[in-house]
Image (cartoon, rainbow, N blue to C red; front, side):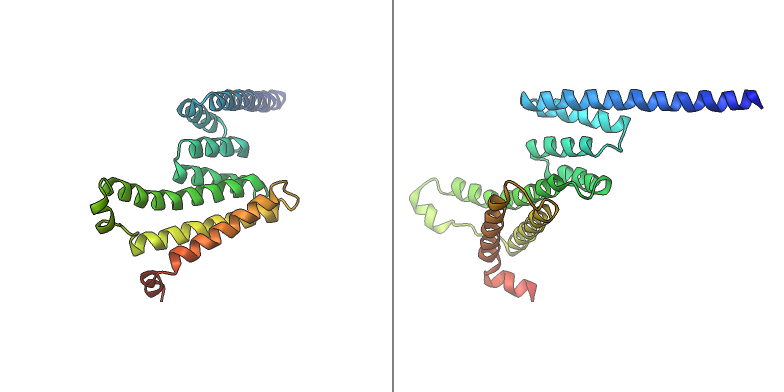
Length: 196
C-alpha cells in the first residue's frame, strides 16, 4: 500500500515538475520570439513560437503572438487560424478580435491592390492606359465585400469586448471607412445581380 502511494506521489511530482519546466521553456521561447520580432526577424520568431506551441498549446498568449508574427509576414490565413485558437482558449481577449479585423481588412486590400498592380503594369504608355483599365471581377468584388464585412464584425466584437478601448474612436472611424469601401465594391451591377 505504501509503495503504491509512493509511486503515485512520484508520478504526480514528476508531472508537476515537467509542467513547470514546460511553462518556463514556453515563456522563454515567447520572450525570445518577441525580441526577434522587434529586430525584424519574423521567420525566426515564427519558428520559436511554433516550437512553443509544440511544448504547450494551451497558452493563448503564444497563439496570439504567433498570429501577430504571421500578420507581420503577411500570412493572413495562418494568422486567422491562430486567432481562432486564441478565441477558443480565451474568448474575452479583445485584441484577438482586433487582429482578426486587421487580417480580413488586409486580405481585402490584397485583392484590391492586385488589381491596381495589374493596371500599373499595363499603363506603361498613355495610349494603353485608357484601353487597358482592368476592373475587379464580380467574384473578386464579392470576396472584397465579404472580407471587409468580416473585418467590421471583428472590429465591432473588439469594441464590445473592450468597452473602454483607448483607440475606440479610431476603430469606429475605420469601421466607417470600411462601410464606404463595401458600398463602393457592392454597388456595381454585376455584384448586385450575383447577390440576388
